[in-house]
Image (cartoon, rainbow, N blue to C red; front, side, top):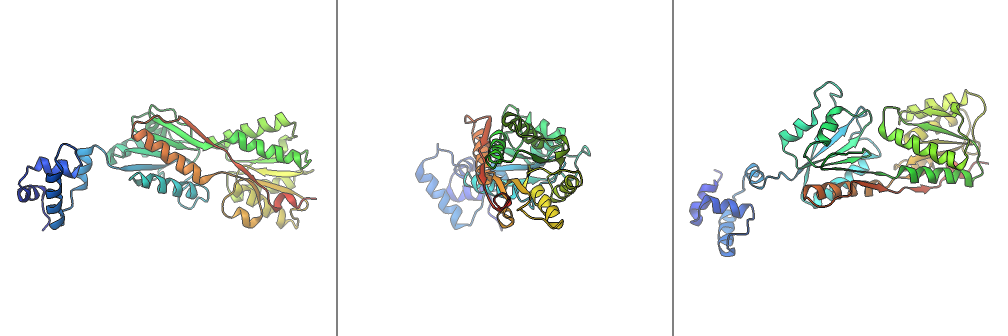
Length: 335
């Protein structure tokens, strides 16, 4: 039969309040009493009630993970799985567990992330951008629960965000295209309902305009951040007449699809250059030139920021992580 805190107190000759303070590591109990009570707890294999501990500390040491928006960017997503792994490792070193909230009832009025976070009494939340964000996400952002957005700008009283530096990354792409002497580029964008797609579009258009790079209207295509979307975009490009020197896709999965469409037409990297963005694991095997987003640093930075909010420390409202151009065969083989 499991021991109770009352029985431990009786065996130690102290009050239940004293035992509770020792369990919750209060510093107003002398060391000798602490040692005696802890020894009795150990001898009787006593495990304190976790719910009672969290109630006393007013902390659960649990953070919520919200996959926000229309795209269910879950455990199979090749980009976010690496970011989230780094977040898990880092937040774990601070002593926090993770609770995942689904978005399977997207826009049914049943998401209510704030109510769910309050119900489970999480200490903070990391919110992952999946595009076409629900209003319930912004209700959570504007609450008193500390929140950090990943690829999602948050403005709440205890909120901040971490994302890659899109202006810097698009600058890398345009500079590289010009260094190769290519004058014409096609651009495959993500879905139009995605906030991050809009940010990337604006950053790329500005970098291209500043550099004088030609972007014909018919060479700007939507790829929906998916391989199939990139494939379909490339087929539309091929059917449209004169072709550009290079195809830049604002996500590696779209670049994979574009390359597959080109290769199915019996052509290779010697006749068309391709550039992606992300540098997910598979990119090195395809030989895709891409801009590497620092997934590990994104996840670590999100964890550090969220911990800062939960500990009432000073936190930067915006953390931008620079990208790195990785050159491979998809551009070096072009004649």
